[in-house]
Image 1 (cartoon, helix red, strand yellow):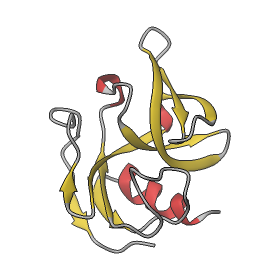
Image 2: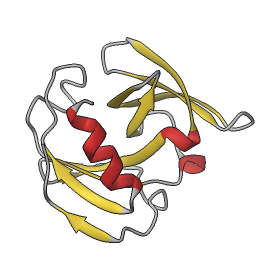
Image 3: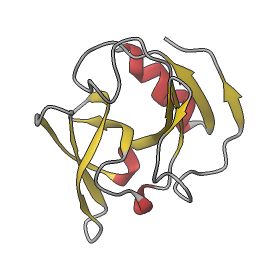
Image 4: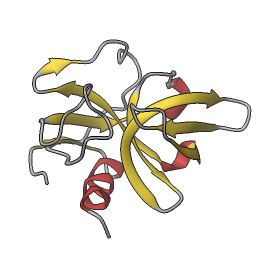
Length: 123
């Protein structure tokens, strides 16, 4: 189980979670250890360019939505350097990134689900 699995579980349970992911796959949008806020999402409202926490082929990623297939209720997930992780169903998309280091992301209005609580415990 990776560090993001525990975060995904909390978000799937309805919490908005603040944490500091590690890695460079999303730079410069998200640099390693920058604080992010991720909230439960309505996957049917996702658009290309949204940053989501999703499980693809058994691994949880905080990556970009690179394509949307509404008919099959799935999204394609990729990093910020062109590497495609693959397609995943709406059921495996846990949350959407609301902010990075306190800066709100654009285009998130109306995409979140009501969060049960704000959970600042993170990795």
